[in-house]
Image 1 (cartoon, rainbow over the protein chains, first blue to last red):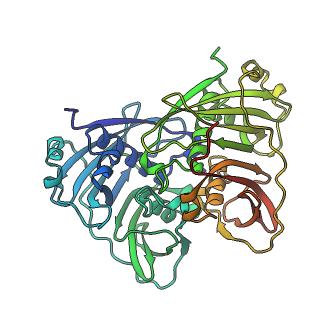
Image 2: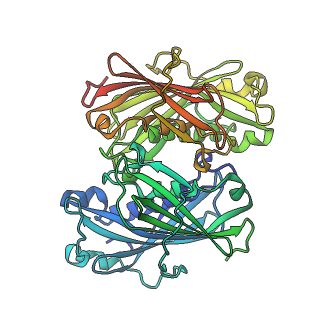
Image 3: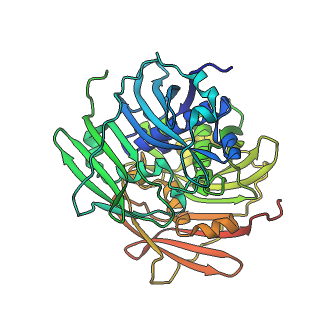
Length: 252
Length: 252
């Protein structure tokens, strides 16, 4: 049996960096999906395998805390492990480590397994009792369990987009990374020049589909916190909370 | 001295695939940029190095011919080599190989080196006489030299977008991959269900910048060929030609 924890290596190419030379939040989220995918694949519950059973993994919530973003040419490792398996959700954690040993941040994610056709949730321990063998409860992920993200009540969208070909993933719904890419696009370059996204949380509430028209609503809270609500026909499809940190904030 | 040819490995993760399970054209272009970046880095003319001299590489033209797209979980290798070094441009070629040895396609690219501040082209053989040591003229790239892509004269855009944070790269202009992503977004899912982009050519004419408003114009030519012209204020920023192939077209 493979060990419970996997460590997946990435090289940060210059072309995935933003104008400041740092890897972007969508890219960091991509590393997470990639590491999760490798971990699941090596243990026999990757998409390539479970799609044959008519089942797919769906990301329900994701929260990242990043102390320092890797920059162009950095080699980083993303450690990932399963913290818990519930009836309908699994908790998967991540640690970003630079190759000099420095911890760059952590992430926590919650996944559901759903039936491809009915889109209804699958009872995970009944479907795959072997998943619990990989639980690593003692590995520390310092990110607190996510709190509710309140809706934004503004009626004036700050941005809108149509869901297009490159937003749609292999599950035929909107790619979870792409929501994040559109969310960060609400901000201008000046914001990213002065600060970094120190904490990011997103909750996925509905599945986005091709040609959906999404409108983004923004709320500015004290202490440099933003809520971005992505809505379709007035209903939230996903909501995210962004906590900005000064560029050189003390690292953990 | 490292050999002239480099072979860079990639694993096609499910989350970079489109709804048909195939890697998308922007992802294939990303592999190209990545392989070029690794090749240049290993030979001392990567961005990390030349940015210190105040110089950057700019992609001027790219053409891809893809016989078969890799699918989720495929392992592929991208071979890359320099075919020629001219005064102001270098020709770099690529071959996509699946791990069972099958050639999936080729690409040909033309790069300029420009001064970061003045944006003026650098005389490459004067600046880096060592580049010619890596020329591999005899390695066969079956893609013909690119012909001119004519402008589209339609006055009715089929799509438009604003250049946002995630479109901007480390050079502070629009990421060359992102133009391609927006171009393929002109087409609906049905098109990608029935056929694949067998050949794609793009020529970059101007640099896109943050908050630019881009409008895409489309021309449908016989034999399933499309020209997509990306314009800003009525002037072409980049132009691309797409040649569609039936899904199971005979491979080369």
